[in-house]
Image 1: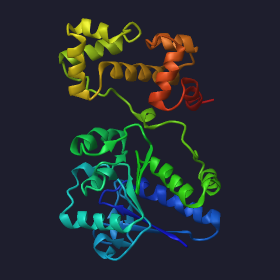
Image 2: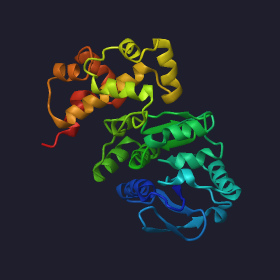
Image 3: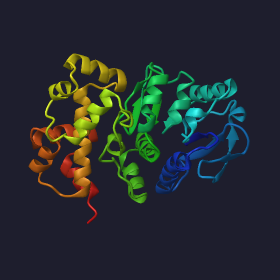
Length: 320
């Protein structure tokens, strides 16, 4: 028995969203010494797909050719400008048909933005590239977006976060199909983690809100970040801006979908990551520099937001 894998590549597709997962499945075939996976690239139209890097992909079929074609797993690859892509009704009908006929379907990276237009993700847990989480959530509030996850499985749906996490997802699918032993060997051969030791928050850079403006809230954020060692509570933030804590919380939730306490936690962790990347500090000193009440509190919050302990992050970032 073999499994057919079909990946839809839209114009301007990110090459790694297609080739990364495909190489994982191909490596599984090499490990098994037989073709368990049959791989197909699907184009929207035409036989050549121009990727975002300028490299051309040769399609095995188009969506219009795929009537009656049934893949075991159907995935929609992402593209840097996919948010601007305007699929017509025929494209969405073709994607919907591929999902219906597949045992598993999903997306890689920003491909979730396109797949969401079919309604197939409504009420489901999914993930996408961290930079597109807000876009997906705002455009499709009926979808449950797990911003930190590298990979999410919900029923028949499989979604991967940004770019290289498509490899992580493909490895999980290999494990589903062929077991952990084969998946581990594939990971070893491709020199990748069997389970990546961090979640997507590790890769997020910058504050949730823009700090370029001159609003009172942005001024407050700049002050809090500059004085994060001394800012010990939301009450201090509220006092600085002259708001009640309730009013400050309401503004933060309206602007960022976060409470001030959640935002402050993220900024403390961001500062800790920056310090860890630049120098090695004792845990007590690191916690103090970032405004945590102690190393244990820092460890708990850091692990929850990043998916790894501060000491583990230090080892990951070590250049020695």
